[in-house]
Image 1 (cartoon, rainbow, N blue to C red):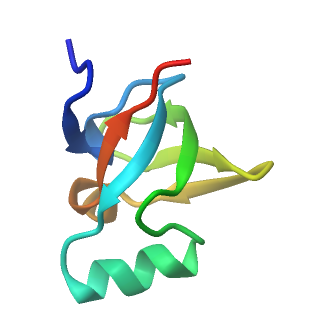
Image 2 (cartoon, rainbow, N blue to C red; image 1 turned 180 degrees about the vertical axis):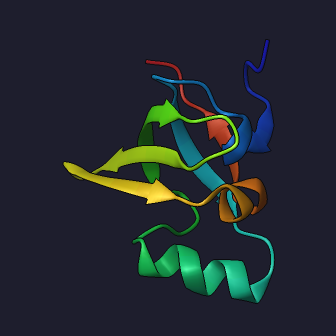
Length: 80
């Protein structure tokens, strides 16, 4: 179980509500900022397509985050 554990966005499961903890390198940080994601951003994982993108929903906007970028975005599970 991933309770209160940090993990890459690429390891998230459908329906997870997560908060961004770290975006790693400057290159990934810049790309994440283009999506409106920075440290503390909260999002819902709509669909994690294994081998493909991670579909997230933030502020009523769905975004597809590429697998390689998602591997570098560290998140923590938020419990309601």
